[in-house]
Length: 96
Image 1 (tube, rainbow, N blue to C red):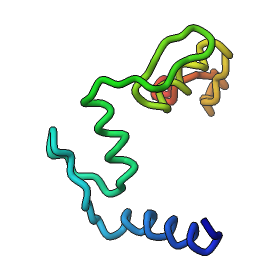
Image 2: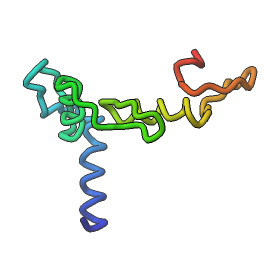
Image 3: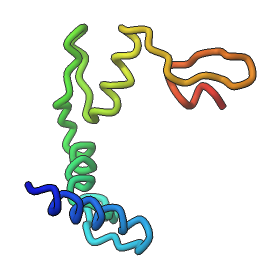
Image 4: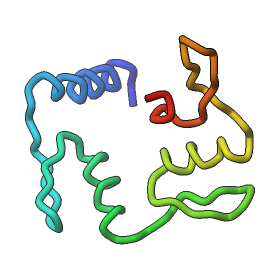
């Protein structure tokens, strides 16, 4: 893919934030989604497929994000820092 095409594709994807267009629909739960690849990721949740496997402990996950968050258990990575007390957290939700 040329750089110009990649930029146009990225721009088109980005502008859906502002247009509110949701052209993709899940046939299972009728959720509406703005991007085709996001719909494909959504459908995996319905199928029960877990294509993302941890290389360390063999746990499997349906979403890549969940695998990445899980790997922090093994690495000890804590990317979220409290600005008040400097405590570190592996999950953003722990800051709340």
